[in-house]
Length: 261
Image (cartoon, rainbow, N blue to C red):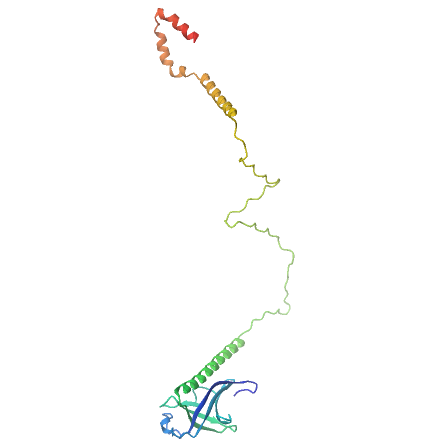
């Protein structure tokens, strides 16, 4: 049953409910609403479903004063404390109890199917929550009953700590995001500044260009004088020409012309 310290919550309230006296059940085939006097209910009032802890209470109260007519404690659903009839979804059988523990079975019914549906769903949701709470409590008890890990020191057990004797480790040099390492600076001196830009330098004058050309011309002329291409390329022809004697009349004036030139 519910403990005294738990609070009571309201699950469902229906303003119109009919109560019937039902005949005892003759066999195990279940209750039938057709056997009741449906056109002449024995009591009419308000139905309120509350929960205190894991127990639900179906309370039949007066519409005006709220005085309690009867109540049925429900510890499980579906169960013997509340049963459905076999021929309708709007009628149920409740086992009511008084403070002295005496019980009796009565029939209740709703005029609207929506009211009976809400009443049934309120009880289903409550006992679904009860089932989940029972599973959680069982799992926690199973975890507590298992072997616990003992991390304490045994008798005579000691531990040694070496503080400040570790080897120093060189810090790794940061690398660039591109994957290439940065070159270290030169060991001894400062980094030389970059050379000045050539945007403001003056172009050489025409005289300097002429001097460069003359130097090139003189170097080319020296190379021509030093080389002796006639001895290399025309040696065979000059030797053959020298073997043939020139005519006597034209030999002296031709040599004189070459000398003057």
